[in-house]
Image (cartoon, rainbow, N blue to C red; front, side, top):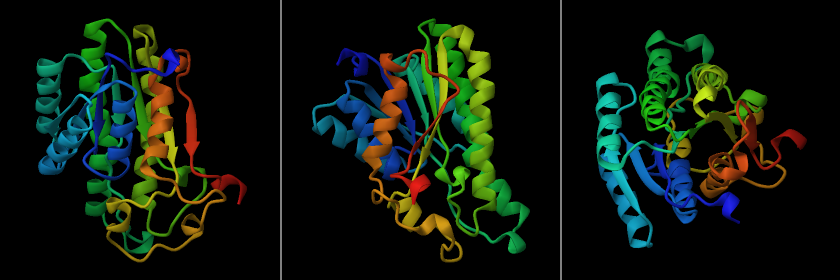
Length: 252
């Protein structure tokens, strides 16, 4: 099973303080990675890192506001200075509030894209620089949404557009980073009950995206398993690919 080991690897997970990000961090830590949790919720990030350490894993945390370029640059510099260049970056953090198209505002659009797409670009740029300088290759996994495959909810024009931009960014990054042995892939998480999804603001969710998947709703750790595959030696020749972990939305 060494093909699925992350022993000695450093993983940086955005939005890792709770929800899907916390599940991803747990799976990566159990596979042997040292996990740095980056989150705007500094107390939550510190608590999640402490929980991983208490469970016998290696973990740290850093405060990060993806909507603030200075914060992104400073947080990345801190991670590299204290822990070295990450082997893996997981762009998981995101906003999923809802605003109906006919009531949409540019302020809401800009806020959503500032975190979900622009923020992911900024941190990918900074961490990819460190990966290239380190000369050891690396992995970047962008967490988009199964909504891109048609499982949509009303009110997600800004959200899905931002996730579509993130999926497109995968292709651009995969092309430019391939000469440096850095792979970039997209994960499409399905329905997962998390504090972020349950606490999303806006009109009540309606549409095909709220139905129960064929296999039931996913848990955060299920999404983490998909990330783990992309991060391991088993996926060394896998880049610019899309993997849906959505419990069978496509068949029911």
